[in-house]
Image (cartoon, rainbow over all chains, first blue to last red; front, side):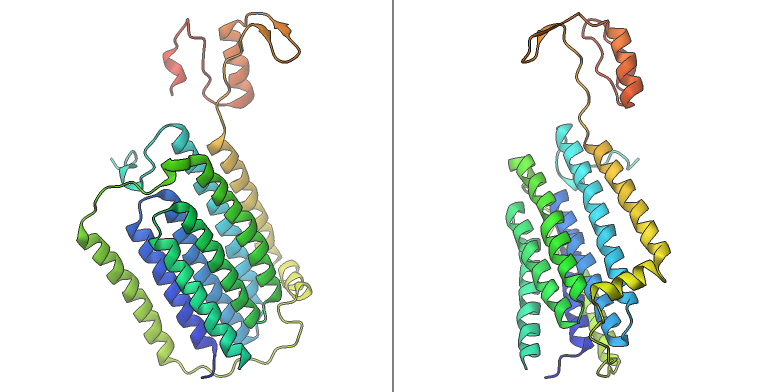
Length: 101
Length: 213
C-alpha cells in the first residue's frame, strides 16, 4: 500500500461526513459547534493535502485562514450560548424559533 | 513503511474520536474526544510536511479553542447536556443517508482521478519562514482581512456575553466601607446608558417600560 494524497482525501471526506451527521442529529448548540469544528478540520486536511501534492504553499496559508475563521466562529457561537444560558433560555436549537416568523 | 503505519494509526484515531464527539451524550466527553481528533490531525499534517500548521493546530486548536469550549461547558454545568426529547426515526435515518452520500460522492470523485506521487518539495516547505514569506508577501491582503475578522469576533464575543450593569446601591458599601449617597435613579440610568449602550436596569420604585427594548 502506498499512501498518496487520495488516502488523505478519503479520511477528510469521512471526517466531513461524521461532522455533517453530528450537525444534523444533535440538538445541543455546543455539540453543534464541535461538529462544525470537525467539518472545518476535514476541509483543512484536504487543503493541506492538495497543497503538498502540488508543492504549493497556498494550501497551508488558506488552512491558517480557515483556523482563524473557526476560532472567530467559536467565539461568537459560545458567546451566543452563554447569552442564552444567562437569559434562562432552553439550550436546544430546535426550540430557538424567535426569528422564524 | 513507518509513514504508512503512522498514517493508519493517525487516521483511525481521528475517525474514532470524531465518532466519539458526535455520538457521546456527555458534552464534556465530546470536547475531550475533539482534542484527540485535533491531535491526530496534527500528526497527519506532519506527514504532509506542514510543520508549522501542525504546531499551530496543537497550540491554537487543541489548546486555546478547546479550553474555551471546556470553560463554557463547565460554566453551564448540567444545562449543557443534550435535551431529552425523542426525535422521529426518519430524521436520524435521513441524516445518516446525507452523510454517507457525501462520503460516497467524494470517494467516487477521488477514485476517478489518478494521482501521481506529488510534487518534490524542498525541506523548507511548510517551515515557519516559508509560511511567513507567503503570508506577508503574496497573501498580505488575506492576512489583514483575517486580523479584522479576529477583531470583529473579539468585540462580538464580549458584546454577546457581557453582563448588564447592576443598579448602584446607596449606603455603606465595599471592603473599605465607603459611604455612598443614595443615587438619583434617572441620572444614574442616563449615565450608565451613555457609558455602556446596554439596557439599563432602572430604579425599582419607578418602573420604566422603555428599558426592555
